[in-house]
Length: 236
Ligand SMILES: Nc1ncnc2c1ncn2[C@@H]1O[C@H](COP(=O)(O)OP(=O)(O)OP(=O)(O)O)[C@@H](O)[C@H]1O
Image 1 (cartoon, rainbow, N blue to C red):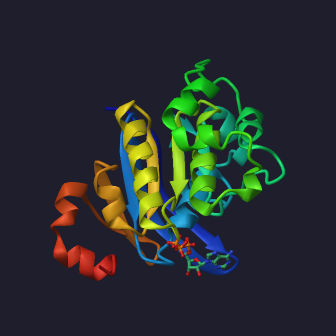
Image 2: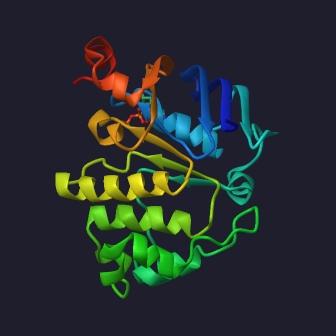
């Protein structure tokens, strides 16, 4: 299978502080990879480096075989890399439907698989809320909206930063169901999470990061039974 997105020897800094050390990641087409780690392990920084929001000081990032290490965030987005940050930024004054329509465009390959009707089918909860102002949605509803909005751009890869963070278990279950369906329909997803249980039925494989370094890689089914790694790096 082809690596759609690959990071090789990635390092990143905030000022003088080094946050990522020699991170290697490979995301294959039509697969979901979990990037797991505790609070402060470096998951968000990795996602930001892949999206171009934080520069890579060393190393290389390849997307569809093309070197995007120095490409700005908007170029990466145009190439089909959709980044959904953890802060769930919706356009608060606009309706759910307008938030989605603002983002509607063909994918870099000309595909228009994701349209409003398909979004309503995949996210029934959003259908009910289509006329509501996005700023009035709950955190979970906003999370669904930002995922749906990313899909409206028909991306090749979704980078999702901690979609389950701070949400009630029932909402987390709804988001999990949507992500499983997306994976089954052939989406390519990198999912940064602290919550390993959330990832188990969504991602096939996991990369564990700790103190900015990749410390372990395993299929998620195996990781669930790997008490040593879970205790050492995932605080569970
Ligand atoms: N803007 C910043 N300036 C300086 N240091 C930062 C900044 N953002 C994050 N850090 C530090 O970088 C390290 C990695 O943070 P990062 O947000 O990537 O971790 P994370 O695994 O995503 O954790 P969380 O679950 O808290 O989001 C932490 O030590 C954090 O304090």
